[in-house]
Length: 304
Image (cartoon, rainbow, N blue to C red; front, top):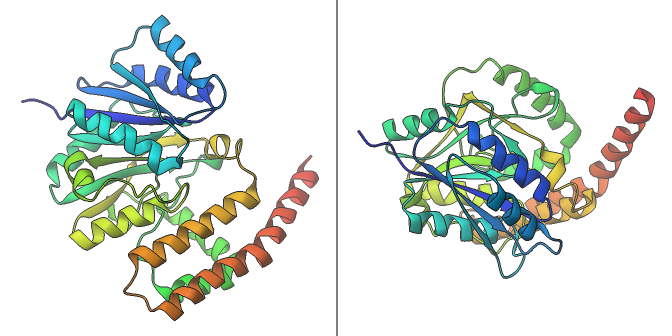
């Protein structure tokens, strides 16, 4: 019996050291039918040359295809280039993977493709993501965004942070796959055929919110998205984005992407309610984000 072909897409922007480390770690994966597409998203440094030199000088247990985008069009734009390349090569599944991801389980691809092979109506499977303190992060969105919940979460943001900490502790004991609205875009596997059907990522947004849009596209077509808590990857989230953008710019990009998602994909929500949702985003940005940033700095000073 033939096993499904997996194309792993890794996007690089100015962080060739992480990409090289990621490529080296993939040599440990015990799966006989995968390849990697590395897309350099028009890095202004010598990332492309460094990665190309590393590939040429080393031996890998899998094939690597390196390409460079014409411009830095963001996460969706760059990943779409890689996905379409993987599709052309014949991938049954595509693993979207940040370059700051490490996969500790050698059987990762076997386990996640086995789940998808057995669940034909499932489009996406995402693993448990281990970040700070060795804990599994919550799925990005368990249920579809509801206007009132969205607004309340923004208006009472500190309380939501507290509740999320409680929920995170509970999810550590979750043993079975959980159907969700969206998984984190840092690492997930999607059926190539369905990705093509829904038009890939929407590259009109630069960064953040891609998962909401992907989840909504799949929701409207009746496809499932699952979080697999027993399958883990390690993500050093602050490295790639934090090294390029400051926290204020990150927050502004998040709000812009949320606004785009609401305007173009959630016409089931009234214009007035969508406006209130966006306003609540700005309220959180102006009131809570600066206070939380100051609190974190003070805590770090005390710890030192």
